[in-house]
Length: 192
Ligand code: AMP
Image (cartoon, rainbow, N blue to C red; front, side, top):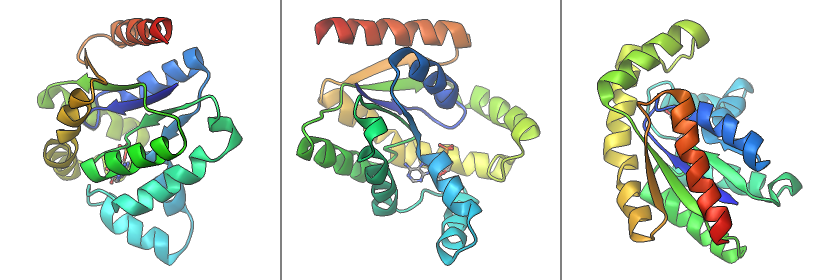
């Protein structure tokens, strides 16, 4: 199964993806994690990437797609993949569609986790105290939310037009959100 997760930072994509991975037995592809792994290396590329990510901006589309495509070619992605935080722009969504079409593995669903901004800011500031991520400070959080609004939220319309969008209220409890996701996935599996 090929699943995309859309949602602003702090919507719970990572948490729900980890639970869904256990259920579907497909790998969790978090582009944020992949980019942070590149940034941990000491290289010109990592310093260049940090200039985007630490400022709350998006990394360049083609670079992200290249990293994702490398992963998709691995054997572990044969049963499918769960994309967390990817695509984040219309260009990335088109690149992903082209890749999946070329490999005859169409996307099954785009899960859209919806949460109000005040709740997101609160959650992200709390996460900053626990994880100490460089991009979880108030200013960068505001920038990342703006980036979501301007660059990522058009994907909601993009996938809706493809008939692949499923929206979930991400402000509910973690368990309730997961129940909603599970019923969507089960419905899709029954249809397949
Ligand atoms: P995340 O861990 O998903 O919150 O991502 C952290 C940061 O990594 C984002 O704020 C972006 O700077 C960068 N990033 C993650 N995924 C993407 C993507 N698909 N396209 C561009 N930049 C990304």
